[in-house]
Length: 373
Ligand code: UD1
Ligand code: UDP
Image (tube, rainbow, N blue to C red):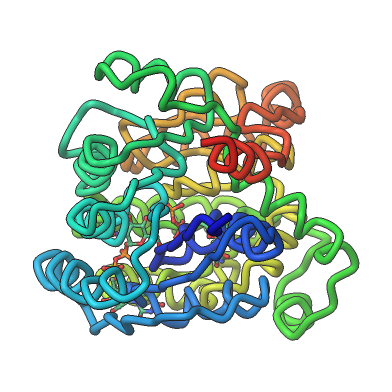
């Protein structure tokens, strides 16, 4: 019997982390012929993930440009995939989540007549402008996809409301937990360069507040507010270390370096490799972020998270009690952070372990589903 042909497409750091376990499990399965195409929407931040998970892409569109725009990205992903789709002729094209790579690759896969499989399907805020452009990206991928791998029952519900047939949806858990559990052993006792360097400049006897941020809707005034809050928290709490691996997007790098560059207990560092970041999450007291993936990882690590957004498509972590939405209001970020630093009851109630995003077997479920088609 002919093998089923898979093309797995991704381009940014979070897609790579969440697709890596699926890539490796498909490659090890002889029922399939699997190829990987990276768009290179991200470069350094993508490559570190490929290295950690030992993935060598079959195709690399190498698209990233400094301070790139959505028009360029969308066009280049679609036209860059054309010759690959035409020569490989996959039965299934896998896309992940909600980036421009996701949306454009789902359209390209559809044009090629492949069945598009959407991993991390069904997340919704139902507000097209928040997050921008991710809500549009995932809704388009959801329209175009034939099969929908929903991480939770809530995401399945969202898809059912959009009249997607239940037979075409599988609730799998989020593959981010597959990645996290797979890495956990390799992260324990980690003594790589990043960790040695971090330990040389940061006092890990103190409480660590870990910060990440990159969302387009927070560019401009949002980041000004966030930086003002972090500065105030640092000044008011000299016994705390704020560690901020800054995203390479120039719209983030510039204001963050300008506004926070000279505060002794704020450490602005380069993006960390995935295992080093997991290590740092594990050694943190509290996380302040606007990241989607970090919101999903934190409940499994028992780390409270303040999310610098007004909406979330990940209500499960809020319901589990791990996540509070604080938006980009300076005073609200300061108030909630101070409360978690001062009120141990509140801190303890937010830091118990939960696994709303799965048991680490999402990829296995996806592969069995496809093999039974
Ligand atoms: C992208 C996704 C966002 C996802 C985020 C994860 C879109 C529109 N945005 O946002 O959904 O949550 O990735 O991080 O799909 N850069 C580098 N090196 C890198 C990566 C980025 O220098 O390895 C710089 C480049 O100047 C690049 C810029 O960051 O042009 C923006 O990258 P882009 O992928 O367009 O946007 P992100 O904000 O990273
Ligand atoms: N991450 C990482 N290094 C860092 C910061 C984050 O490897 O310095 C990982 C993190 O563990 C998570 C993912 O990157 O799995 C989140 O990526 P990001 O916040 O860029 O994107 P989002 O999840 O918001 O789309």
